[in-house]
Amino acid sequence: MKKLSTLLFLLLLTIGVLTACGEQKEQVKEQNNGNSSKTEETAFPVTIKDALDNEITIKEKPEKIVSLIPSNTEIAFALGLGEEIVGVSNFDNYPEEVSTKEKIGDLSVNIEKVISLQPNLVLAHASTDLGEGLQQLRDSGITVLVVNDAQTFDQVYDSIAMIGKATGATKEADNLTKDMQAKLAEIKDKAAKITDKKKVLVEVSGAPDIFTTGKNTFMDDMISIINAENIANDQEGWIKIDEEAMITRNPDVIITTYGYYDNKAVEKVLSRVGWENVNAIKNKQVIDVDSDRVTRSGPRIVEGVEELAKAVYPEVFK
Image (cartoon, rainbow, N blue to C red; front, side, top):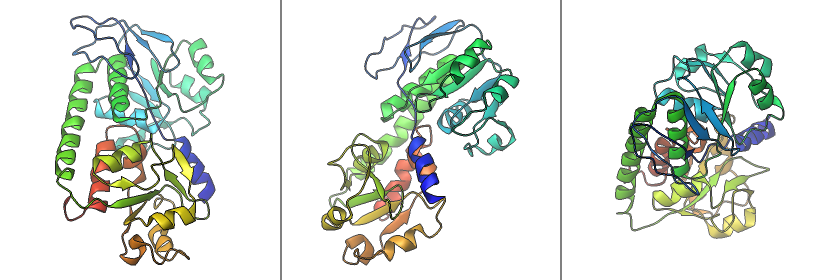
C-alpha cells in the first residue's frame, strides 16, 4: 500500500506553460519558453495552444467543466468556477465542495462517465497519459484542454492564466496570480534576513525506498526561497536517496511529506538505524508537512512555501 501511495504521489506532481493567442480589448504579449500572456477579460471564441501544442478553440464560455487532476480543480475553484465544475478525479479533496461532485476515476479515467456528464470543457493534464481517451472525448464533441506539467512557479501562473482564459475568468486569474506573487514576496523578504542557513533533506517517501527532491523541482525552489539548502540539490528530479551520502551531508532538518498515509512517519525517521548522529535526529528536527500544499502545482503552492518556512525556521516564521 505504501509503495502504491508513493507511486501515485510521484505520478501526481503537476501543471503547465501557457501559450496564448488573439485577445480582444487587451494588448497581447506572445509567450515563448514559459512566458505567458495575461489579459483582463476574455471574449469568446478564444483559441489557446495547449500542452500538446494543439490549438484549441472554445466557442462559448463553458457552463459545465470536468477536471481530471486535483491541481486543475483547485485552480478552477480559486477562479470562482465551483458551480461550473461537474466532475473531478477520485484524488480531489480540496476545497470541501469537491466532495459533492461526480467522481470520474483516478489515474484510469472513466471516459464513459466523463461523457455522460456532458461537459463543455474537460481540463486534462500533460502528466496523465489517457491513451486514446482524449480522442474519445473529442469525438464525442467535448472540448479538451491539456494543461502543462508545471515545474516552476512561473509555469503555475501560466497554468492559472490558461484555465482563466479558457473559462472566461481572466480577471480572476490575474488577481489570483498577483495575490500569490505578493505572498511569496513577503516570504522571500523575511527569509532574506536569515544568516544561519539550515541544511534540509526532504523525504517524499519513507524507508526502504526513500525518495527525495533534487533540482528543477518545486520542492527545491521552495527550499531556496526560504533561504535554506537542499542537500540533494546536486541531483535532478525526484530521486531515490543514497543513505550514506545523506548521513554524511548531515541535514539540520528533515521534512517528510508522507504522513497522510503513514501516521508514524516522523517517529520512524527519528528511530532510523544509522542516523543517530545526524543533527536533525539528535535535535528532533523532523517535521511532516501537508503533501498537497507542497506538491500540487496550484494556488496553494504558496501556502506550501510558508509551511516549509515554519518547519525549518520556526523562530522566524511564527
